[in-house]
Length: 494
Ligand code: FAD
Image (tube, rainbow, N blue to C red):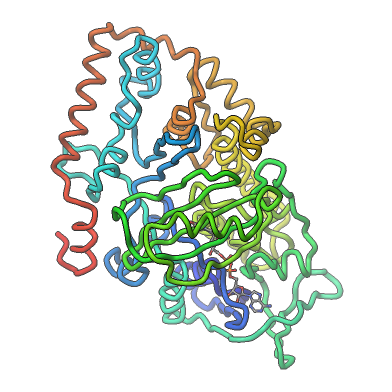
């Protein structure tokens, strides 16, 4: 097989690296990119699944952190999403501890009804650690709970790092501007990319990583796009890095603004910032001014504008072409899922790698799974917006009034009536993630699983009290995030 990857952003080089590592011997891989066009490359926050990708490639964590100016991430703080002045966290890892069959949320809901449940953060190892700027890789002692973590990193540097990895394993990089895409007259499949200077690059299978342009999947194959702007109306962002300032937090901060939200992502050498907003509600100049007025340090570049439409291609795999990354669609970065979606598309594709001509049943299967994955993440993001209590602000009032996707309506109704969270199949976010956002945004459950009543009230108090005390003690023994990072990057970590 001869694979041609169009585009060398984070998606292109992640794909090239994975194919070079896993494709059978003899596979040819060529990547075409144009320095004149450049990349989006503002992706900086990830989720813990990134470990799987890096581990599959065999990357060394210390080297990876050095190469990408990375830092650790224990979760995302949502400031002002419920109301101005309030904040909660979607922290990675578990909350509390299950008792028997029942997850902790039911015990917490019962304790809440009885009036003695503390805020969720008191039962989250990651949030307690994050708020005190501490962390621990893995377990502190064999008996300690395990700390889940992800990374913040410079996605442009990550792409450059993976480029070196891929080229060392035989991937051929071609610099050039793709002028057109040639299709086979009989089958309709893509036959070749035509570059400037009339160079022609043919292949058996094409991977479209050309970013928002979607040159192959949309430009050539006219696959179609499902626009989700009615659920997620933010359609622009302005991004600017600034010098370090404030705490070096081991978490991403997302702060609600009048017509969108602002991210803050601390890296080793700078803080990444951006303002995601709805252009129907605020001008570009006002959005940039809001961002610049809310930085923790000095801006290190001019604010960079970005435009997007939230939604996904109707098919990610169409004929002999697979779209990955921004070419496949756009999910706003509220839960840091885009790089994960690149990774999961790659691993799904590798598990269905065509031996020759693409099989239609396999293509359908891939697309069904991709749609499921994308729509469930979309629902989770919509929840953050819909469940706001920022009454009197036009953007947020409109978000509360929107008609929700049916899949989300069902999930919410179930939570509100029973305290149960239904995680369907392999949807990305677990019950613990949904629980934190539902509770953090003030979406009340009116009941809990009655099995939680099997504990006496005293035992329930004891369970919550002990859980909290153990976690507080764990965190007290942890080093500071900055020390852990410093030791690893300097190569003196245990
Ligand atoms: P791009 O970076 O746009 O790369 C496209 C490539 O195609 C480039 O190499 C370009 O040269 C090439 N190309 C295009 N046209 C041609 C042509 N005609 N000829 C030759 N080459 C061509 N993700 C996260 O996981 N976490 C985040 O925190 C996060 N934040 C984000 C914030 C914003 C505002 C945006 C817009 C995105 C964010 N993302 C985030 C998404 C993340 O940046 C992207 O998913 C990721 O960088 C992948 O981009 P890409 O490689 O698909 O596209």
